[in-house]
Amino acid sequence: MASVHPRHPDDTTSSQKDFQMSAGLTVRQFGSLKCSVVEDRDVQNPPLLVILNHGFGASGEDLVDFGPWLMDGSATLTAGCRFVFPEAPIDLSSLGMPGARAWWPINMAKLAEINQTQNFEELTRLNPPGMDRATSLLEHTIREMQREWGYSDAACVIGGFSQGAMVSTNLILETGLQPAMLALFSGTLLNRERWAQLADAHPGCQVLQSHGDQDLLLPREPAIDLSQLLSNAGFEVEFLTFRGPHTIPMQVLSRFRERLEEIVERL
Image (cartoon, rainbow, N blue to C red; front, side):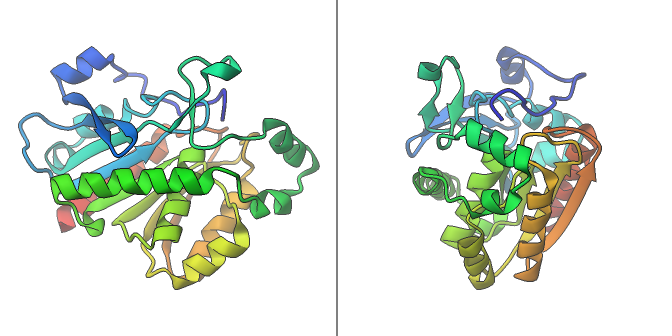
């Protein structure tokens, strides 16, 4: 998480200046979080709001490349989506990681120990200090976007990579927010007992989840447990396994684009 980030589409990676010239990039403050907003300049009110949260140790711009890539490959998404990429609240510069952010502190030594012993039950019981605060900040940010732009829950897709997937899961379960889809890229199961209770009480929503079979940071087994927990509670889960490490590969991004297109066409 601190050193491995999603794989950006190699043939379309651009600078922020390029984004401003093509898809249109602006930086806005919603609630207490700085957000990068990617949208087509010629579309005044796209019907779908897509919010993607980066992982631990990444910069706030880590996932921003995905917005233009998804739009460039799809006229439906170009006209139909506004992409927002919130920046996590914690600055990790004091830990020798300039530009890096986190949703909450992570005990990397403890995570390494869990991976070494394969005591995944211990991982899934964790309730990380700071997760509730991060969830509250993210909820406030999303609600402010919804008020300003007029999006209902059903006109939002919320998700993220790694720790960004975890905070997204906690947000949906704790608040009862019911988006069009929850997108979980290389996330994991935490706080198992509470999440199970909250999932049972939730109306449910569509979920797109992916995980690599060679992930050495967050093993696949707890992610499968999360998929089963959500499925048992009535969520519609599509689980994608890919051959690879802690990342978002092209085939997952392509399937994400297809799912977004399906949602836009229904709105």
